[in-house]
Length: 294
Image (cartoon, rainbow, N blue to C red; front, side):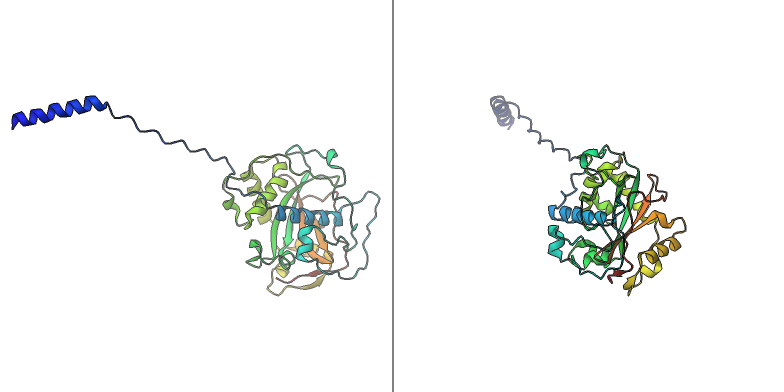
């Protein structure tokens, strides 16, 4: 038995010498580090163009003109543009005493300083969601039938101009943290690229600032009712907001309308989110606006 075991031991050593040492395992390739904001979807081109056209129309309606034109007056109720018309940019610019067209900027693009952080104040835009959802019922933000929702926190200048697309900086690393503000992450991506990059803030700081600004405005109780609808003057809407928010003055607010329908209420805020008088913008000049019910 001892001799047999010795033979086996010698055979094993011979095999080991012939085959050589076991080569080390190939290391697994290193995974590429995911860049911050990689989870953020690219803005949907249709959403981006639709939102930008909506902003162009809104700003054209209320842009202050240096020649003083665009005075308001009695107007008849316009029909709501179709969803296809809104998406394609064929929205009717004729509105309650608005300019009815023209550039959405007071100054050419070349005259606007697009350096991040170089702007005068924020325009906190609260969209009346039922108006948008009437023609976009399938949008994620419409599922809960909300009333006023955060559209965006937009850098503005006192002369009526505003910067956009100030850099290609990546958005928030975890966009899901802001689902309470933007259920549609494509809209979040659009708001970051178009407006957030001009704020001078990091992505998370920008959206947390937007959340704080949005949370700091109390929606008037009469505009949160289940059966809210009908017609009301823009002045009464402003009055309801100032009554619900004693820190706000009428000059700090802008009412936006399209085809004599309420589309948004906008609040002018300093960079540290204190109310400030709106400069370079004017409010809807309709005698009354129709409130689309939720």
